[in-house]
Amino acid sequence: MEEKDLKVLRHSAAHLAAHAILELYPDTLLTIGPATEEGFFYDILPTKNLKEEDLPKVEERMHEISKRNLPIEHKQIPKEEACKIFANNPFKLELIEQIPGETVGLSIQGDFRDLCKGGHVSSTGQIQHFKLTGLSGAYWRANRENQPLQRIHGTAFYSQEELDEYEKKREELIKFDHRRLGKQLDLFSFHDEGVGFPFFHPKGKQIINIMIDFMRNRRRNYNYQEIATPILLSDQLWHRSGHYAYYKENMYFTCVDNQSYAVKPMNCPGAFIVFNTRPRSYRELPLKLAEFGLVHRHELSGALHGLFRVRAFTQDDAHIFCTLNQLEEEITVILKAVFEIYNKFGFKEIELNLSTKPAKAMGTDEMWEKAIKSLKNALDKFDMPYSIQEGEGAFYGPKIDIKIQDSMKRKWQCGTIQVDFFQPENFDLNYVTPQGTFERPVVIHQAIYGSIERFFGILIEHFKGDLPFWIAPIQAKILTITDEQKEYAEKISKELLNAGIRVQLNETSDPINAKIKSTQGERIPWMLVIGKKEVENNTVSLRTLEGVQENGIPLNELLAKAKELNKF
Ligand SMILES: [Zn+2]
Ligand SMILES: [Zn+2]
Picture 1: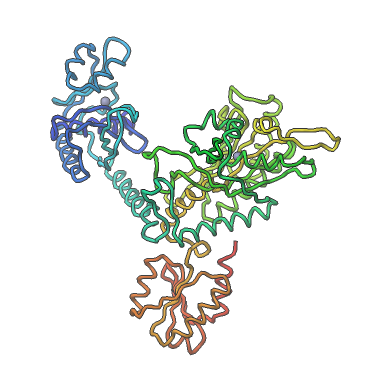
Picture 2: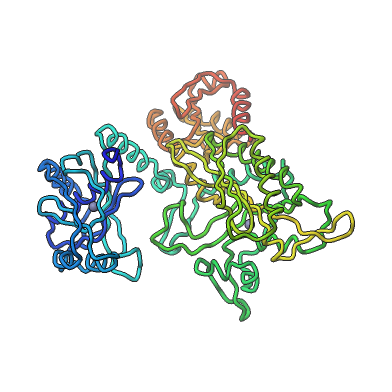
């Protein structure tokens, strides 16, 4: 069984990489080299940092050592002996000291020795299908105060086919990386003037606006009301909300009129203030306050990753104030919206997780039971499997996490539905019952995109840059065969614009083939080609991004088709 364990193979491959590095760069200090989900890494301290160009050489040496087919031995040795072997390596000495007991594990292949718990294949010859995938920075024991190290990444498989498949997928991921497509398609950029804060260009902002319009449209259908709350709010509020105690490290602070203010990392307290502006009646419940709230969170610069991890983003946040009895109906409606919205973007595989009461929790058992039953009942109404994570809920309420799977089979958690018993207490939220008494509502925190910026990045990769018609920033481009068709092209352009279609005119004098090529490069869904015949017959030729061509379409037919595709 162990023969088939990928972790064993990958950890052995990490030793192989370290072995090769020591043969090539003998003064390198090794630290640790574990297997990961994707492969393995080894953190090293070289005398001179390795470059990407050095990796093929290391790989080649790894193959050589593999061919030597050295047996891999593993034994326990006294700590004293280990300290002698690793006398020149302070990292290994530190590790030896921290291992409990009198002995430590040593792995041996040829003249290469490494400190190790064990779990290897039996000889280097069994490690054949591997690849070094890159270099990055790391710190000793992942602590930024410690020695910076170089991390060498790689992966290994039991067969060449699996490795080939992995590499193909990796190439795809690099090719369709949203950071790369974002530059190519002129959608957004990042700058040193604001590290981790995205700049959206006209076409990128257009896409964001459509995402927001679509969300607004759905929210209208489900009786949400939109609010806007301030970005800067006094420290007092953040003390009350608990963010000061638990989230301070990730917040930005400033001073206004000698008072300390924080840039909001979350929108919830703003919504509670709006709720509390006047007495609320049971008749108003469920009250659904939605906000496109711009939040700022201080992420470590090393953790930033394109639009997937930024320091400022907009949440499609909503807070639903309802009674415990209304919970099931409200969750049902949210789930319905969740499926509609994800499906519209082509996300059909949706994973749902219900997290229940943890050991330490606030509120009565009765409240929890009732809330969890409501969530389950709501989930059961849909033909969607879901899993239950017992005890994984937050201390203040149960939740449903929602993951989507993209076209490259990666899973993303975007949406959350979180029930909250705590903040209604904390912010003294209440409503007047039919009997004239005061009761606390339950709050549901809800987001479907999660971060609009991150969802945008996911969409770009999911569609591999070819956005569908309804969300493409430029939907159609008009290409004339000669300048003689210019007047007719302008007329069509106007009609499409009036119908709400985002259209552009290619006004260059390039030959038609060059025009088609450049439009394809811009990934514009529709090319409207106009020549002499089209002008005479009052038609257009439509060529789609997929290469399907339809000639002689009457203008009104084209407009109807565009309007239909634009619907949401
Ligand atoms: Zn090992
Ligand atoms: Zn919230």
